[in-house]
Picture: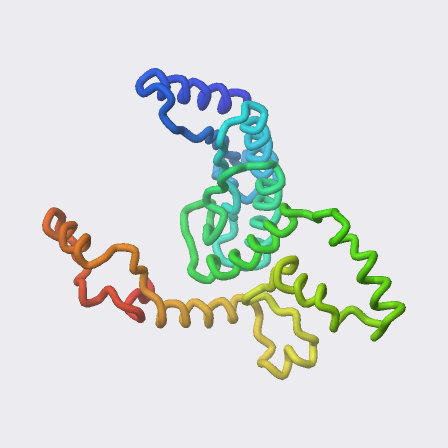
Length: 243
């Protein structure tokens, strides 16, 4: 980390020497290798600690900082992938990084990515961001007056109170493919696991959505200058498919 931070600081100095005050991101990315094989280990605990430490150095220098996390060593969106992405992304979030690269979809230490992983990781990152936000403490969130109302004026529970309804929308993050049903409901709904639900969500997205950030006029100009092999007629929902 000492070497990486020094190298990146020199790079920032170099950029500033060429174009004074040019925007730049402090992005130290020291990678860990498994010393038994020499292979990169993007999902290791050591990698998580290194990247979090780099983010803290960025805060120390008061620089906009980007690090990498979520680079699971697992080749599939399985249990190993889940726990590797969870602790690497959590440490990255709580370290104070401004930008976290590779945080979703990545497998095999950046050698692959997965549509299903993007969907599953979206749930995970929402929950992690909620932990980063933490708990806001003020008179409203302490809810002393609400407790008094519920206990002394009825109905004796909080479910119908307006504050509860409000908190449901702004304080809670609900998973899209994660399951929170009872075992009975889960069984009645087909006993699916998260990967099966993610696959179904991927098929739904691919059948209904196509990126539209490049308009027809810009697309035409790009095609005039470059040999684009994707026909414009194929740039519609349902055509993305799999490779």
